[in-house]
Amino acid sequence: MIDEETYNDLNQGWGGRNFREPVHFAYQSPVEKIMYDPERGYPLSWRELFNVCTYYRQTTGSILPTDVVMLLTNRPNALNWFSAYEGHDVFIHTADWAQFIPAPPVYPIAYQVLANLLRLHTGLPITGKGSVGPLHEQTIGCMNDLCLHKSQVALKLRTGDICDTCLTQLKVHEVPDWLVDTILSGFERLRKQMLFRQGFRQAQGPGPVRVNEHYQITFPEQGNLVLSIPTLQRLLYLFLLKHPQGVDRQHLPDYKSELLNLYGLISGSGSRDVMVDNVNRLTNRLDNSFVEKVSKINAQLNKTLGESLAKPYRIVGKRGGIYRITLPIGSEESIRE
Ligand SMILES: [Zn+2]
Figure 1 (cartoon, rainbow, N blue to C red):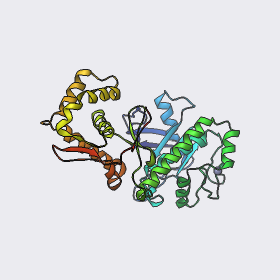
Figure 2: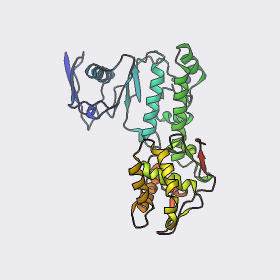
Figure 3: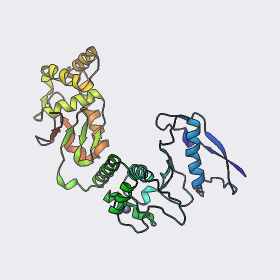
């Protein structure tokens, strides 16, 4: 029997590649297809899910057999697993996480991406029903816990760990150390960010701000969350970090050359004229640029850290007066210097 399937969801780009039309393909199936009914949530079979990966490989043409294809889908799968792999193809179920994890679903989904990347490198098959391959049926807080009760998944996200048996397995299958290390540190970052979001750090005061070699602003004690803001806002924030006592807005024009130097370092190849122009506007009391940047930075801090935890990192100041970041002096960690 030939069945057909159309996937509209695949129109969203992945890795810069786009399907412009809904993905439609035919495949051999021993059983009649059950149509998807959103009300009843009919699951897809693993075969169907892996078929999408295969189809993606075939149609894209530029994917090597050793490349990993991951299908992130909100459609449930027949065996109700969080994820599974076959060869270098992976599917991950992206819906319903709120039932199991008190954190935004992006964390457990990112965890599944990392865990599968590592697991599939062992080459051990996961065959679903009857055989669970390298997975533990008993929940021990290891990446490879099967989590028969789905709520048990919270434990492995909290430990962010791989047990000794599984580490040995990875060695036996010659999974490179760098990959294991990268994925373990990925687990650790997710773990910290999740705990942090759940408010575990609130009583301990603000952690430092770190400025890395690319002049990115990160929060190391919050799982290295990045303050993702455009260059000019970054310039202003870094400048204020360098002046923990604050800067009087009336005197900003005195700092033009300092701002320009820092700007040059941050933006690397930016045009000098544009930079001079931007710094002139930023330091001009009659221009809105400064106040506008301050409020955008503060908004992004709230978004990144949550409103109450963002507070000490925010820029405070009165129009026309002194502006500063309220962090305790010495909270900037720079790994450039
Ligand atoms: Zn294990």
